Image 1 (tube, one colour):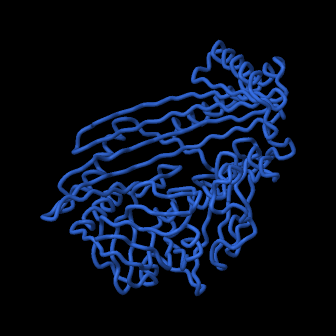
Image 2 (cartoon, rainbow, N blue to C red):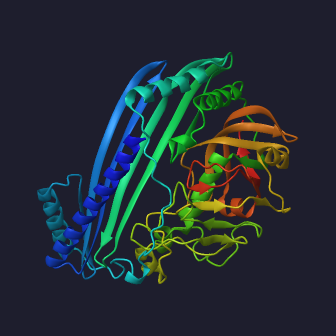
Image 3 (cartoon, rainbow, N blue to C red):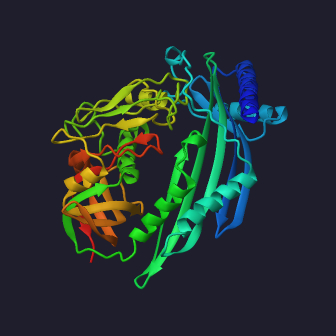
Amino acid sequence: MSEVVVSRDVSAAELDRLAELAEDVIRRARAAGASQAEVAATIDSGLSVNVRLGEVETVEHTRDRGFGLTVYFGQRKGSASTADLHPDSIQATLEQACAIARYTEADPAAGLADASRMATAFPDLDLWHPWDIDTTQAIELGIAIEDAGRAHAGIGNSDGATVQAGQGLSVYANSHGFVGRERGTRHALSLALIAGDEDGMQRDYWYDSVRAAGDFISARALGDKAAERTLARLGAQGLSTRQCPVLFAPELARGLIGHLLGAVSGGSLYRRASFLLDHRGKPVMPAWLNIDERPHLRHGQGSANFDAEGVATSDSALIAGGVLARYMLGSYSARKLGMESTGNAGGVHNLVVAAGADDGEASDFAGMLRRLGTGLLVTEVMGQGVSIVTGDYSRGAAGFWVENGRIAYPVEGITIAANLRDMFAGIVAVGSDVDRRSHLLTGSILLRQMTVAGE
């Protein structure tokens, strides 16, 4: 316990040091003629151990530093960065940023976020949980995870188990006088296994990702899950081309929500490169569906009191009753669109997709399979065949064919295709089986129909 306390004290002191450095550089930037300036400074450290077949493959200790400075001379912008916090490197970075700004074209949308939008409250979001694990313990844990998976009959090989412990400190400061400190931890366990039979080899994996190591599932549970998933793929078949309902498993359903975010992000919109251009205030999903951003969830994977520009975050609806309530904007994209920042510079903070269905009932995974009836359960997608510009969606896939609400057999070598506009409008249900390993919190998603291309 004492070592964890020491780690907390050191982190607070390092945050203070980064904040003092950031404020000093901003003062020097103003003295050099900059009308505005902002600094982002980070220190990330961690341990990563990989074991395979009971032997250590890699051990990596990391401690990375970053210092980025942006200056504005009116509406001319210059940015420079360094990984060296030595005073000479910081001074060279400052001089380089100022030199760049003096020779760039003025951009009417350039500049800091509005001073009135800066965060003023910084409640503890319970994001800091250093993991007191050394290399020997990490190796032992990795071996235990792999042993649990390899103990299953039919598992013939392993691609290895990985144990990762990480923590990060960051400071964002700007010439409005804002100084924001953040610290957070992220830890992960994973295992990939290989099984084979007369029909060929199959590979699958499982992982867990947490803020606090005490939240991990057990080594045995992770090994069992990876083995079960791998063995379930044996005997995979193809499918003939057809149209049918498709159920996306929770870990893939969040990818669909990610495509929605890409389409409503400011960068896509002001470049007019989104199929949801001019859709704010219009229905894009079924009327029963709601999606909300919840930045202040304690212990959340994406929780934050302020965005990458210091703008205060707040709870806000993204989809309300199926209607696109707003876009996802930082200050630059907001100015380009004649709007205001939504506090999303740097991304979204905990997006919660409410479970529900067109009949008003929420279902767990077994219930979602019953809703699917006869159709395709997708557990893996491949390729990059998604266009945010047109909404066209076409990706390689694998999973399971389901009949009468029960998994019949594994399938592979297929392609699933539709248009995201139709996919979003055709959501039949969102499950209560939420995958909490991400900042995109959604259960499985059932779509009314997609084209499945096969043999």
